[in-house]
Image (tube, rainbow, N blue to C red; front, side):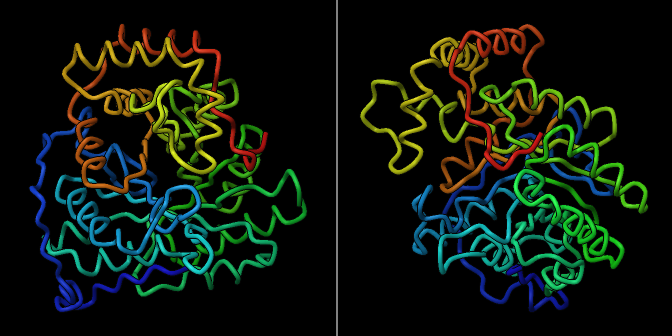
Length: 359
């Protein structure tokens, strides 16, 4: 675990201020439908920001020269009411493993805004199911940071599909982190319906509430398993966190099957497989965005919010961050939700499910 966020003295808050040349975008302070939503014992913004790209060279082309703009993104988000940031101890490529957490820790320390605003930031980090993590103490050690408490400690994935004997050790690790007060809440990521119910019951017996479940959830990923997970979360009071709400970029309207500007690397292959079947959905997104005076990404993210989830779109440019913030402060009408969901069913290609998601 690489986050270092000590805020014990005022000087720690302003150790290395960086002037931000960008104009701060101010969105409506009263988010729809609440100023904040409950996530376990915490109150968080109805949308968070994902930081998978902050350190990932293979898929997202990260370079350390991007760090200044990433800090501007962080400041912009916090200044506009975003207080939930999702990360993981495995985010980063090669020697940059953990880079996302390191950057978040630095940005929090150097945040120039009000102390109260900075103190309300919630870091949701995911712990990888590394094969050597076999005891509760290994999870406890992974939590030892220069910060009073992690917001949400999450298991990044389940080992039920390939190392079922390790699964209990992972669950006991969550219990240990919670019991020792190292995290305010615990959650899971990439857990399918059956495993989600199992871990919920296991934790409940030990007096540990399961506060969140993070899965791929979007208009591109609303199949049977995902909707069953959503139903389970709703019935048990677990908050569903939607990662990849823009389908890795396919729901931004930026790409078409015939365009020559597809992303490089692994995403290009995925886009070539899925984009040719997305015309009905992309047409509906465009129609609604033009009618409402919003961007296509704003409509796609707002759909996730309307479904009662907390989307965590990834951001790696100020322009993206500004646009994502425009998904807040309004809501899609019921007829528009129906139109989008019908269009999604008429689009034959769906997002490939994460290989780590269990049943």
